[in-house]
Length: 310
Image 1: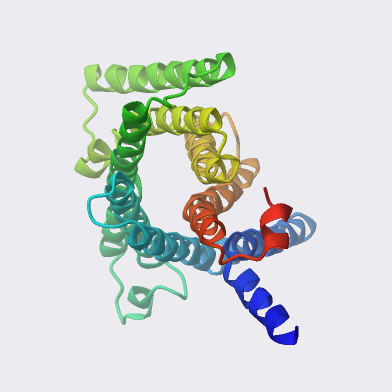
Image 2 (image 1 turned 180 degrees about the vertical axis):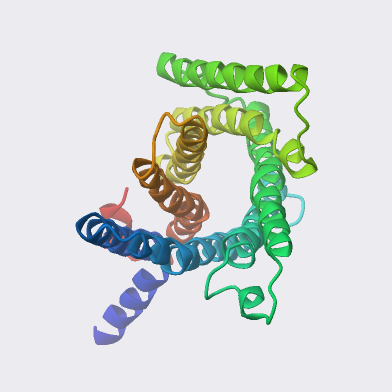
């Protein structure tokens, strides 16, 4: 009896990837709120700057690494020739791009104590800026291109099996709102180009990010509706997590644009910085939920764990 309980406990702990991700992210957000309160009370921006430069940066890197590690485990669960193996390979490549992106943009691309370049005798601001631009490229265009390819493979599988879902009215409204945002954003780019503005290569390479996010949102919503059609609710949590992650990323992107146009003045614009943490957590929850679904199907999770989350 005791051995059976120990076995169930070990199996349950192995299935708590999602709980660990949620709990860790919640703890860091609590720290961030505390830093914001200290900033508001003292008027010293060092509180909030320190949080995002060190604890916040470490959280983003950890979540990306967790997303990649869990994605690799999911990828290995599918044999050669299985359609989902290819899909998860693209998703793993996406998460690997996120890891590199955060390492460059949050650590090497910021003048903080975590950046080894900052401890050089004569650190080059231009080099640090190039590191940040490389990180934004890897964590933006490259990452989302891989993810779009992965979700496309999943949709192809549902289409071949006859379980392709259909978007609902609120889905179309969301995609329509994002399309309007894209038209406004790229309209401003065209106006700037006609006025003779010259954009850097890093800026141009980042232009596909928003169209990719629009495509990803549509793909994720279609997958969620397709999973709902099959009645596999637990697997749906995986793709729902990706949908939430993409939506939060869009909100963060809108926040950056609103800050650039002074629609959200400083210091209120700092509030939008917190969006990237739950977004990164949602990306990590995608493979976590998928792995837990596989473990549940194979009987690795105890019965009370399975019923408690179904």
